[in-house]
Image (tube, rainbow, N blue to C red; front, side):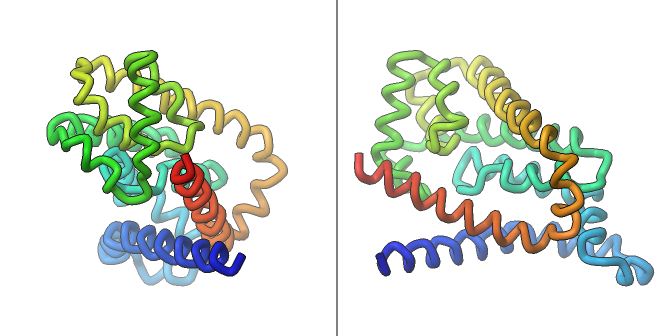
Length: 231
C-alpha cells in the first residue's frame, strides 16, 4: 500500500514538474512581451485567460502536440479541456494548432524512423504497449488507430511503429487527424452538456483544478503504465 502511495506521489511530482517546465518558456515570453501595469491588477484566473488568448498559447499547444507524437507523455486534452470553460473566443484556433502540431509530430516520427527496439524506451511506454499496437496494425492496418483514443496507449507508439509497416504517410496522417478530431468532438459534446452547471465553478478555480487534474492524470498514467506492465 505504502509502495503504491509513494509511486503515485513520485509520479505526480514528475508530471507536475515536467508540465511546468514545458509551459514556462511560453509564459515567460508572454510576460516579457505583453504584461502591462494595468494587467498586474487583475485576478489570476483572468490573467490565465489573457495568456491563452495570446499567440504564445498557440505555440504552446502546437509544440505540446508535436511532443506528444514523439516523446511527450501528457495528452493535449489535459491542456485543452480546461480551455473549454474559459471565457476566450478562440478555442477553435487552439484546436487547429493542436491538429497542426499532431501532423508535424507525425511527419517527424516518420522521418526519423527510430528502431522498434527503442520505442519502449520512451517515457511511460511498456513493451506490451508496442506489442498491442503491432497486433492492431497486423489485424486492421492503419485502421488500428481507432483503438488509440481510449486504449491508454500513447499516440507516439503508433507514430513510431507505423513507419515499420511502410504505411503511406499521408494516408496515416489523414486518418490520425480524423481519429483525433472525433475524440475531441465526443469530449466536447460531453463537456458542453455540463458547461452550464460547471462553468462558474471552474472559472473561479482554474489554478486549483489544474493541480487536481494533474493528480488525477498522474494516477491514471501510472495505472495504465502499470496495467500494461502486467501483460
